[in-house]
Amino acid sequence: MTQTEKTEILVPRRRPAQARSRARFDRILSAAREVLVETGFESFTFDEVSRRAEVPIGTLYQFFANKYVLICELDRQDTAENLAELSRFSDRVPALQWPDFLNEFIDHLASMWQKDPSRRAVWHAVQSTPATRATAAATEREMLEPLAEMLRPLAHGMPYEQRMELSGFLVHSVVSMLNYAASGEPENFDTIVAEVKRMLLAYLFAVATT
Image (cartoon, rainbow, N blue to C red; front, side, top):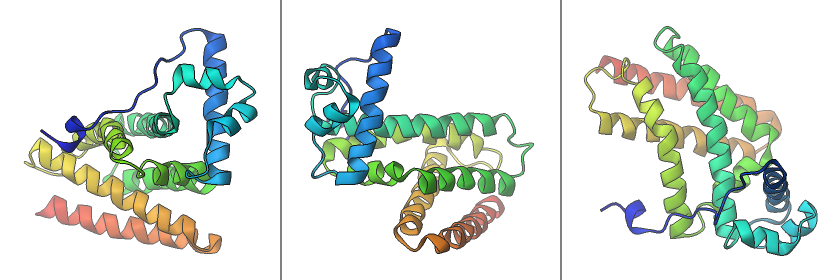
């Protein structure tokens, strides 16, 4: 049994079905991002999210048992956007050359992290407890599975589980380095991203020729 299977996966109590409820739900998520960026996770409160989203605090508890569940939903939201980008690329692989795919996908992630500071804040927040880490790992797997399939033409003969590990290595390497880039001077961001691309291209070339 894996650690993810042993630890509770945090999910909302319910998700809205009607348009009015979805709009309220989206306002809560947007307000949560603002509060997280401005206050940090330790000072993050439902009171402040409720005030900014202009909804009763009871409405937050209808959807989310606590702030840990809410943060994990933000992580799912970020992953869904990355999945949509991967889906766009999957139609072009293997016709799309791997260096081009890697360049474009890293550019996509870098743009998200540079333009939206909540990406980094959410990434840090989901590391806070065993349950949030397990939930983030389960959410991440949804992105690793299609990426592992896309790696099949490159990693000749590599078993599926190894390709999953390779996918995880690629994603964690990029995200960790984006965190490093975002924490430094803004003028150095693009230089670091370029180095990440060069490092991972060399690694994938080694994988393809092994």
